Image (cartoon, rainbow, N blue to C red; front, side, top):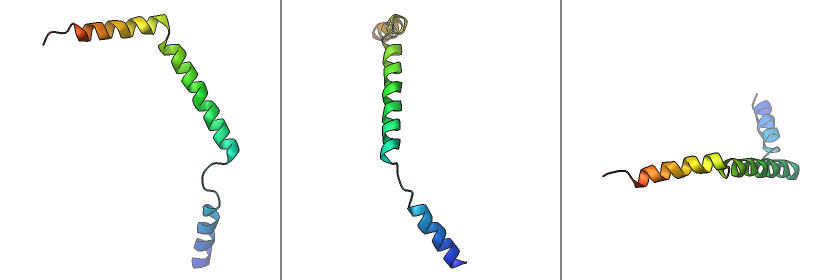
Length: 62
């Protein structure tokens, strides 16, 4: 029983972390997500919405 458990523990330890290909795919996905987010946040509609939120926050009475 202990030998089976120890074999499973050792086998699980062989697959730690990501390989180089997985890092490349993860980095590509993160860059694509950042590009989409940048396009959304710099669109005219979102910019005007953010501008109005900031304007209302600055004009708020205390």
